[in-house]
Length: 408
Image (cartoon, rainbow, N blue to C red; front, side, top):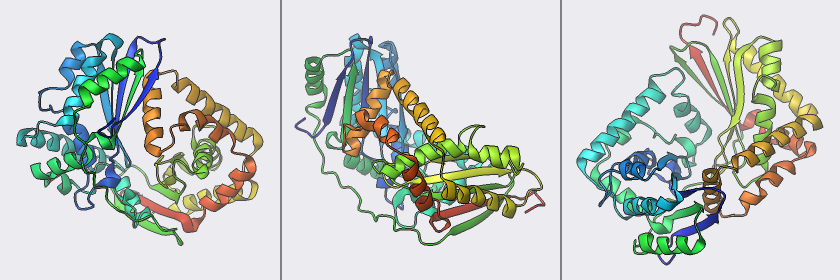
């Protein structure tokens, strides 16, 4: 559109629903390092009322719709679905809060309180909740992935004032910093008509994106030990890996399922069932747009030493580097991944989200190429990437000691 809003139309006459997915190109990586947590705070503020609509949810519920949102390191994503005949209600709601929020001290105080309680509940007051507050700054020394979406510390949210949030809104919540996907039982002509009517006159803004450094290659192991009142000792090992458009991303995503997903996985089979060192152990990826982390996380059984447990993880990795994975293992996880993608694509909302994210990444065709990108990974490439990625020099390790555990 003339104001810079990117609009993607995806028609599906087989559903009676219509979806609006509005992706704003702002995540925690775009925040001021001294004022973190703002992207997540805005996820809450955006439901607190806009200039002409005091309450977001009620009109949508009257129209038979539902909505939600999420914040990541890279984006903030808002989505709603309604019966197709009521889609204009969705346009009205989304366009009005893009135009201007109802900035009031009362609304800000309420949402700050909600976020602060969430910070305490999820990150401070539950066992291992502060793990991300430790591993991210250990793994990232330059890149702004070094704090979680909730923020570095509660004080950043506590000290947020009206001017701060107004500036953040004006800089990031603008049509020229957003991708709107209109999907479902709606024609292209109707989509254009409603986009012009509801979004066409919202002015573009002078978006000021922060400049940040690319994380340099990690050349030596990093470690940090924490001691707290938790049920069991825990080890978390985080390895730098490729971003969403890197071939390494797809190899490491598949590997995380092979060695760490479920009771048939390598880590579980060797370290839980065979050697009885861990009560549970998993492997997963952070899934970021830019280079992220491949992580192995496990809770130790009582009386197992941290040294023995970590050495056992290293032995599994060493075996992987030497032998790689089998053709059968790879094909099995590729088939499972393809099935999950195809099953997810049945849902119109999932398709809308994927279209928005692919556009954000700069390659709208990613939605059609995703399965092939997983299937083209072969065992030779996988072995090469295991050896490159799972080096100890590329690893940041958190040793989380249980203060009531004598075997440390």
